[in-house]
Image 1 (cartoon, rainbow, N blue to C red):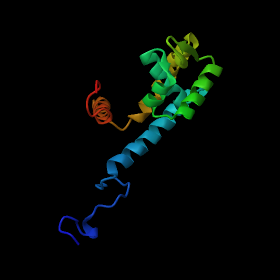
Image 2: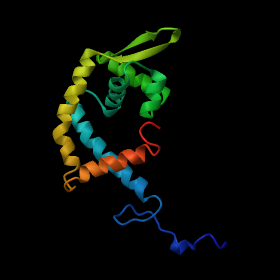
Image 3: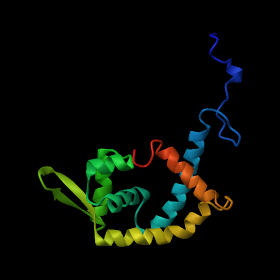
Length: 161
């Protein structure tokens, strides 16, 4: 055994339990927290007839304006086929449209419709009481602190890159 490799008994093992200090602990906690948050937000979106994947694309369209599918795929962590299915769904529901991109015969930009904007606002209203459930175990100011920490973790080089 080499000097820089600790003995197997000294290596922390991933358990997924509170106090886990393995190198996987943070990732496992984030995954569990994401699954919990996703289930709560899915509950908010279900009555509106959309899923989180639809909402993620709508969020990008509201933020960026008309956006080509390739950029939507990158922004949402989707692949080409997945983003095409989401945009197809949004178009079918009248929440987004594809338009030709001037100067590029093959490219299509996706744009949110007025109906999409209305549903986007309704989703926020529907999510508000459910979102409060996500942070019920946190004390005063801890929700804001958590958001700050997660933003820094998600964007290690700052929001502007």
